[in-house]
Image (cartoon, rainbow, N blue to C red; front, side):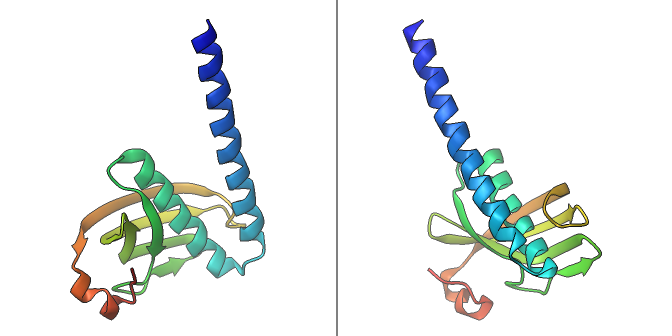
Length: 129
């Protein structure tokens, strides 16, 4: 019983920390112009989903326009030549992300992870250590 209580307490702390981070992120989104808000919201969603779906990745950055410019139509952004950084390495990232009209929440999201980007190509794509 004591172990169960500890597990519940730890879970509550982790959930509270995640909720706090999400609240801070939402406040920062509100300060951005709508176009920037869409890109930031969807980049954050990409990192969160990748982290949840594949524990071998620990994404800490996304770049929507690393290799090609993303396409935006209304509240949807299509990224075909993006990248994300995980554990000091960059990987090709493509995703489609549709947000609510205020661009504060994602309503549809799908992504594909490509190959690792060789460090010799980072500078050409505007990527960094």
